[in-house]
Amino acid sequence: MAKEFAALKDYLDVAGEVTVALERLSEQLFQQLLQVVQEKLTLALQEILDQPIQFKAAADFKRGSA
Image (cartoon, rainbow, N blue to C red; front, top):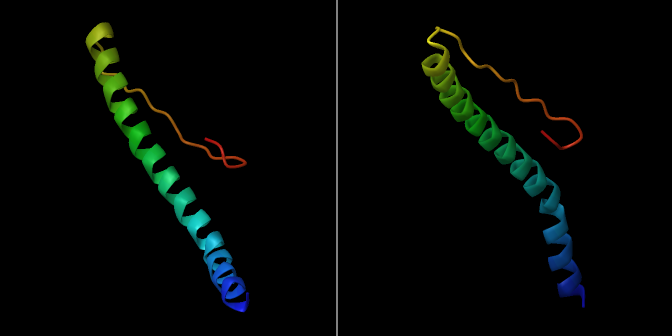
């Protein structure tokens, strides 16, 4: 039983670090996706409107959501 308790404690000790790492990864992936969307929408708008405009968006994360 002590062995199982120690294994569970070790698992729980790293859970917080894993959560933080996954949140960072999620934010990085969202930023990359947003960059691609900005580039593609800018090209589409420039072709449709025939003007040198740019589409810009800013990522904002509140309460764990984008």
